[in-house]
Length: 310
Ligand SMILES: Cc1cc2nc3c(=O)[nH]c(=O)nc-3n(C[C@H](O)[C@H](O)[C@H](O)COP(=O)(O)O)c2cc1C
Image (cartoon, rainbow, N blue to C red; front, side, top):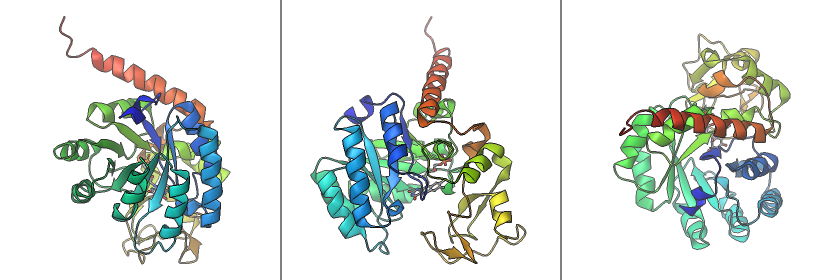
């Protein structure tokens, strides 16, 4: 648990396809949270090598950060990426879209922490049985490929059988929500959308502005774009020619940025989670983390009012 002791606020800036890179990871780490990026954001294993070198030298041995690896059987780059991982030793590896097993030996072998991203209690049980150090429980309201469980129910169910690190995410964009999740039994909160609208995010300026300009009622969860339920910005679906009355047919399942009926998923069609309602400006990551910490402390003080012994 000493990993958590080094944080100013118990937050992972969650990995986001085409959005998170070294600038965001370094800014989050320096500000006292955990930055993360998905390996597919690097076009090649050589570029992954460069990014890991940049991040490791900027953050040094004491500040935690995370790499997100896709462990699905279709990821042909995984063996080569894992060699680079073994060389650079990211303190945390978060697995997604597949069993964590392929990375366990390498990462735990150098003393790294493996966290498996899961969307159901059944998947959480499987990952726990595989021996992961942590679980990232993706709940309802998450941006990108979303979960369906209430974060409270998810954390409670997982705590019945798992005493490792529990991160929970989905629609949490402020420190009050972070405090709620920690109070509910999580160790860390997985925050994606809030970091999408930062200076360091690689999203196009129009995408960031769409996050700022819209609220929770402007989201649509649909499998029509990637074949899996994901939370999309309604104006972005309209701009890309989707008929909102006909989003019932799931697309062929795909996890990359390939073409969806002439539109490029993730690059042109933009995702966001339910936490966008409290995002009012594109800001530097350090400002976002300062505010998360201030709100977190305020919420914890408010909580302490109840259950006093005096
Ligand atoms: C635009 C976007 C891209 C995402 N890409 C990835 C990804 O490549 N890998 C992954 O494991 N999760 C991905 N996610 C999910 C986030 O890691 C995280 O679970 C989610 O953002 C948390 O919910 P929130 O956005 O409501 O804070 C993505 C989310 C968004 C919004």
